[in-house]
Image 1 (cartoon, helix red, strand yellow):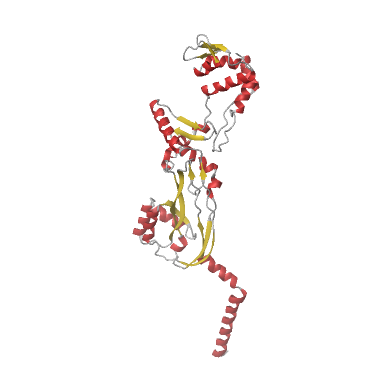
Image 2 (image 1 turned 180 degrees about the horizontal axis):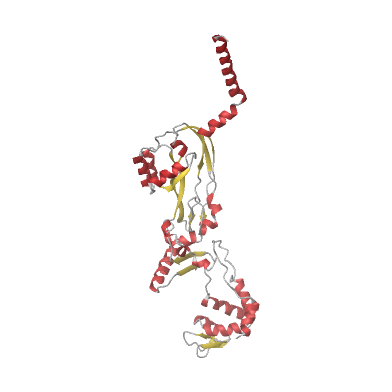
Length: 393
């Protein structure tokens, strides 16, 4: 074969290869190119604001950055990790051990994305950007901020690192507050610079949520219960303030509490919302309902006089005692003086099913319906159990 013939054959093979690439298998090459250069970035939506009844904000979202590494890009050049001074500066600002951070990147050489830090402040993100480290990038995200701090922590709750509710209102209404993220499809060159905005999808912002809480009453209640717990050396204390006309919760506080803006304080005994998780004896709050049931069933009327004697009343092996002598008194006085003996005698003289029915109708033994995570229904006697107890008296 002559040199001319060989050259012609080589040219024909080259033309055939070009034709094959451009006509028969163009999609494969385009796909391979896109895999190297096209990226889809998540565009986070803003979480809905939570406010009190007067519009005062008690949970808002602030812009922050996530710092990530692209190990494959980092290792495209063999000297990527040789500038130890800048890598150590990155580790220091992220509060990471330099050796561990670099080792983690090396263990993931073929990956295109690993988080190094989340919810980094804009000032810190600016400093990291100025380090100009190849393969280190940032993406926008948000962090929840709670202006009231520990005052409203138990009712509002917290979100996790990914922005979803973990406690309180934040968890109960997570879907309402979250919205949906958008996306942005871009093309980058080999140096990581954006060279084309291909497409974008619009996200949906989270919806705002207004509570019945009055932050002014909330603050007063929190200061009061915190002081009371300290004064009495108690392990905990709870205050719930209700609007007597609507039943709306105006304040719900616990001590001890925690600062939801500080992850170091997230200890279980501080985070427990005792107002809804801990079953407690209702005490004297049930006395008006005993009197109400007595009036409704005809067990007593406004003229009924109850003799509380010397303020001590034995029931079976137990003893009911008044804190002060009440003597013979009508129903108004029994309530006014909060007589334990008077109410106990009244309760024992009425049908048990009527009394328990009253308790059930006002919510004893069931959840409140305010949709807070972790609420327990409490405990209420059944008629059968109550009759058994009465027979033992």
